[in-house]
Image (cartoon, rainbow, N blue to C red):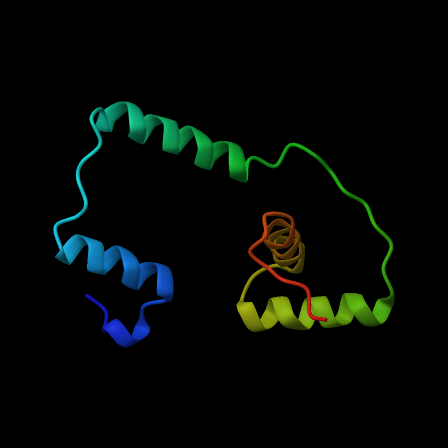
Length: 93
């Protein structure tokens, strides 16, 4: 188990609930598991294409960031877009 210092706020909340005995199993774990697997598969299904024009400077920066992350730049771009539209990446103001 990782140190409590390395947990984010949500993970700490879950850990505290577990340690307090406040978590209970769902009534139909098999059906719940299947529903969650289906949702995960639908989330990562790539069934549409997006073509955009961006500046060469932005493309080079995108490729550099993807290289830092160790993933292909198109995968990185798709991940950034997904995080933004799902509310997990906030705008800087």
